[in-house]
Length: 490
Image 1: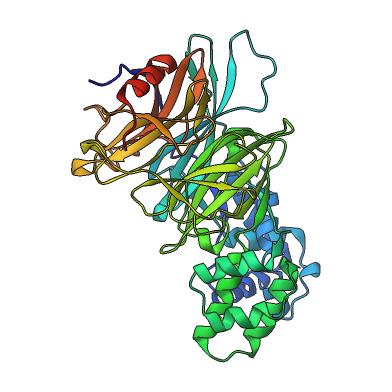
Image 2: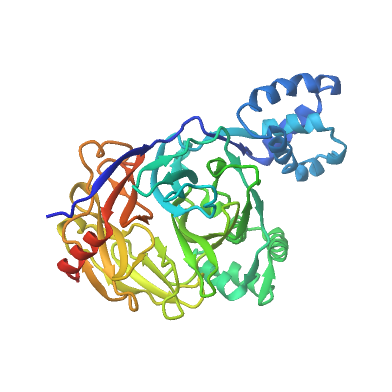
């Protein structure tokens, strides 16, 4: 018999009108042809061509001139190759050039699912009992490319949820690459990425124990230029792709949280960034840091990554290392336990594991924690976000995949001091797709990437067959009591 859970009659739908102006580039030779054609336009005709573009798209994008200038600036190296002094190109011509290398991308047009929920750092100017929340979603657009988008919501003391309407604009962050790399960790990750060993050894021997991005790039390009074999040239390029996995995103302070989209940046993310699991992490000194684990995907390789922020304007992004940083479903505990960071994972695609580390980016020696036991989870199981601390244990919402690839939500309770110990696991699913939720982009799926506790209730945002998201609530005490009564699953 399943524990009573109440669906909250609030749904969040994608907005297909939300578009982002992205840099568009389809090869150097074609790009040079376009540049030459634009440079041939008489100066007195340039404004007449670019003015209608600015008028039309200024209604769809914040500061379209800044975007077009930025995209034009990315082509400076091609101007050098064409023996054109970029600094002498006048502003309106630069804007026109930028427009030819810009396209609109509808970030939520295909699917919208896998929500995670976190308390907003800004809790000012609220009424008694209200909390301001940030909900992240996996949004999928053209080409099945995933990005992370946000909604803001208010919840009151009665658990009424009001999702704030989205803004009119979508903004892409400025990308800063200022990483300092540890050679040992970097080349361990490179080896795991199946890059040619001889190429790795060649680059590794030229670098110091710690090195900057600029040094790495210079070393790779010099070695690549000396290489005649196309296969080896590509292997050098792959090392650069991996280095791009470290970066920082900075959003303008005049953007709303709903305006900010974390879009794939590095080559290793080119097929999408998936299933962010946000957690409000409290460090030993009381400092609050918001982390999220997510999966970068390049079409064949899965790369677990860590996102860090304190304000949701600036995000630091880096890959995770170690034999425990594999596959999907990594979820960080909200504090250290006995001096260690603790992470759940699903390194084999089927079972739940737990890992301990002194370094938040290095995860070794995963320990098997849970295996599928009940009929509704026989195919695989995994976590649905970071564990939640209760007086009686760590509450873990999980997912299980059963017959007909139906996804259900379950729950477990782990020991507070030693979370390797499972106190209890629900014998029956907590939430299953009902007839109103089973149809969609991917049918028969309910899925979540993080929950929130308010007024004694666990609030679970969940995706409905990938076409929208909703919420459910369940009494924390009733859930814990049932978990203790059901006992361990293994």
